[in-house]
Length: 453
Image 1 (cartoon, rainbow, N blue to C red):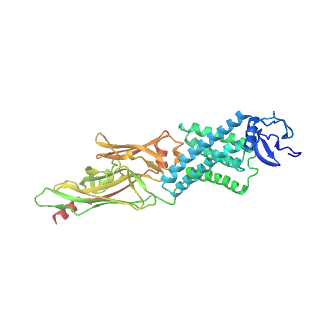
Image 2 (image 1 turned 180 degrees about the vertical axis):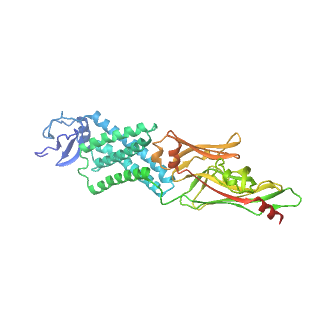
Image 3 (image 1 turned 90 degrees about the horizontal axis):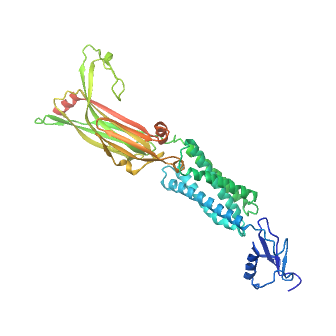
């Protein structure tokens, strides 16, 4: 057996763990006397080995009663670390999954992928907590936990900054605050323990920390400052009257009308509401040319003045929807419908005016629920209502739900509203809601002449 002891129990470290060495080689560690006997049994020593026998075992930095491990506190810290990392993992995965798979633009998908990578790092950090809080068999376990805590701090800080923009109460805000406080607590413990010491590849760890900072900066910049200047919205609209048709034995004429729209810009859009209306305009001839003095502004129109036209009036001849609310126009997509306007041959209308218009929502800024396309009859018109969400999941989790409502009537102008706690105006800008229209006017006398020819 020799003059040296077979087993040496080293002094307890800062946490209370005592290493076990045999012939100057570390063979295990123990938190307690019971743990020591378990390690000795694993090494082949008898269960009834006398731990006070100086010829078999040597104690350094304390005897067999020196076990300063605070087991309850240590296990509580481990559990809290795991819960915090798990909560941050779920949040990062939820945000990243929605944007990585469903976002429209490359920048949004990139942010989603970064959040998924952050969630993957935290998934690795969770088992590392158990190792770091235990025997620390893996040298980088502490560094992995530190990186996971940094990601949690970055994510929760970003979400709180976004939430502070509106300060709307959402159920998740309590989770953001709790996660932010947890990350500060975890970083305090990990930094005080200097967990980065002993990392075999410190540059890679530093790169991971830098990636965390880049994730936060990119996400914040995109969520707060993104302005899609390189991809403007532009449409080509047409409303063209065709050659009228009639017969000698019928009292009416048919006038073809072709309505056309093309998304000629760089951003796909939702059609929130659309409408085409054909107006029949009547007027009296002013021989003295005093019509300019009698001009007036009609509802929903711009002022006009004609010297030899006075006492004008307009009446709806036909009205309908072009494509229908809830539809989409992708980049380069065209949409066209053809209809026939019916007029009596003895009509008193001087001109026909066709107006095509629609309200749109940029799909790179918002998403409309499928239920929006289902109309609900309301009096003489239809109402369309549904959820509208931001295209960025980061903002969705920090805001209350918004709803978009569109109304259409054959006798009234179409309308769009967005329900929000702070008013409609700001929501219009955030979702990129806009209107576009075109009109075309022809002489009824010329149409009747063409029909007879």
